[in-house]
Structures are given as C-alpha cells and as structure tokens.
Amino acid sequence: MNRNRDAFPSLQHGIYLASHSLGPMPSGVRQSYEQYQSQWLGHGDEDAWMSSWWMLASEVGDLYASIIGAPPESVLPLPNATLAMATAASCLDYQRRPKVVTTALDFPSMGYVWGAQRRLGAEITVVPSDDGVHVNLDRLLESIDEQTGIVAVSHTTYCSSHRLDAAAVVRRAHEVGALALLDVYQSAGVAPVDASAWGADFLVGGSIKWLCGGPSCGYLYVRPELIAALEPRLTGWFAHENPLGFEHADIRYDKTIRRFSQGTPSIPALYSVGPGMRIIRDLGVDAIHRESARRTQRIVDAALERGWRVNTPTDASRRGGTVMIGFEDPERVAHQLRSERVVVDWRPGIGIRISPHFFNTDEEIDAAMEIIARVTDRDAGA
Image (tube, rainbow, N blue to C red):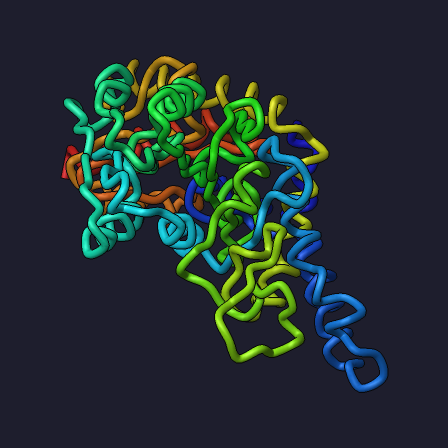
C-alpha cells in the first residue's frame, strides 16, 4: 500500500501523520500547475476557456464522484465545504419545515451556516454528546421528526473521529420526508463513502485532507433525482442555463449540477486536486480503509498500554482515520513532536490528532509512539 510514497517528496523529511488536516503534496501537482500556466500563457493563440477551463469543474467533479460512490455529473467543485453547505442550505423552505438537526460534534462552520438560517425561520436542534467522543445514534434518530427539513451531520467528526451510521441517518430522514446532508470531509479518501447506496441528498467535503489536494476545492454532491427540483438562493452567473448570454433578468437555472454554482470557478485550485485524487481512486478506498483501521488500532492499543487518554472510539467500526490522544498541554506536545520531525496537530480539549494514511508504514507508527512517549515523559519530569 505504501508503494506510492515516492509520489510525495515531503515524506523523505520525517513521519507525516496529519492527513486529517493537510495531506502532503503529490509531485504531480507541479506538472498540473505547469499545464495551467502554459494554457494561460498561450491564451492569445488558443482560447484557454473554451479549450480547457470551461469544462474543468465538470471533470474534477466526476473525479470526486468516483471516490464518494456517486454517479457522473452529480458533484460540483466549489471553493470550500462551507460554501457547499451554504448552497445546500439556500435551497430549503424553512417556513414549511423549519427544523434542522445537527450534532454537538460537527465542525463549527456547520453550526455557523445553519445558525444563520434562523433569520429565515430555521429552528436548530443540536444533538448533544455525553462524552465528547460519541454521538448516540438512537438519540439522533429520535430527534428527526415531521417538522424536520434537513438532517445535517458529520459522517466522521473532526474532534473525535467518531463515525456515524450514514445509511441509518438517511433512512430515518427520508421516513419523515426530510432531506439528509452528510459532511464527509473527514471520511472521503480514508473510509468508505457511498452516496448512492446511502441515498444521501447532499454530501459536502473537500480536497485538503485525505484526498491530498491541498487547500483548494470543496465539493457539493446532490442526489441526481433532486437536482432539477432545487433552486438555490445562493447563486451566480455560472448557474444560469445560458451563462454566456449575459441576461439581465431573473435567473434561469441550468438543468445540471451546474445550477448550484455561483461565480467564476477557481481554475488554479481545480488544477491542484487531480494528482492526489487519482492516486486515491487507483489504490481504492476500501483497501486504504483496511490499512487505516489496522494502523489506527495500533495507535489506540499503544496509547492505552501507556495509560494515555484516548479521545477516539476504540471500536474500529465506529472510528475514522484519526486517533486523538489527550495530554495536559497538547499544543506543546505537538510542537515538540515537530521538532522531532513527527508531524501531528492538536485541538483544545481534544489533544493531539494522529492520522496514518496509505503511505505510512508500521515502523513509522511504532517510532512515532516511542517519540511521543519520550516527549511526554520528559515533560512529566520537567
């Protein structure tokens, strides 16, 4: 599985365990950017928009689709996942069905977006977590009722790596006539995501983490049967049925996934995401997930043996690709690890976050755990 290490030059400089935050840059990104620069430079000879750029978002969207179990022409790249979620939120009628169900372990940006919909009549229900690690699935399902317009939750949480039963959430939402949106940012590329099998109405995510695309593109998946029925309030000229007609009138939405666009797409960003996603697609997420489950368990077991607090599900079937280990001063631990060339990060109240990906080795995991032990023992003796 780690045969692709050569595609990531930065892996030569240490142990990289932060794919939950920023995936390492694939070497192919340089060639991809060179292609973009060449097209821009040659625009005077050949129209870069018509020859390459106009359809690039569609091509990248289909690449995302191949990883998240979605059909072609159902995924739209957008500048970030927050904008993708806000676009979905702008499709809803909060006067008819006001309730929005979220959880306490969702990424803060989700709460900000849905909270802002209160001005339009939305009523936000936040399902709590008793331990800061898990969301009780039964409690979540019980909160979804006939007043619910949408259930918008993280498939895998950023703060504990707890993984929800996505199919159960979608099934309950549909039983009461609600829509279901899943944030798969911390899942896609490291855990199985199957938009079609789940029946999800929306998925949002992005390239920066497990897909090794850098801080470039988010994306919005819309269930194909819904596309033509939704009219987002958050819109722009690229969403128009005839954008090059430059009409000064109410928008006529495009009939395809492009109806969820806003303004001009970020062309350089689109060029940066392909190399990493093709590696993920070719390796296969199922194979990546098997290795991730095994290696995260290796981390969990080593942490528990040392008496460290694990702020992550110990059951692999409920865990994403990250392990959170609680220390009294996680910021200091993370900085000390970087000085030892072990790249992790930290979050307040959570601890350090450790994420092995397909390119890591068992030897790296064991070495990292020994270095963490040495660093924290040194702190304890200070």
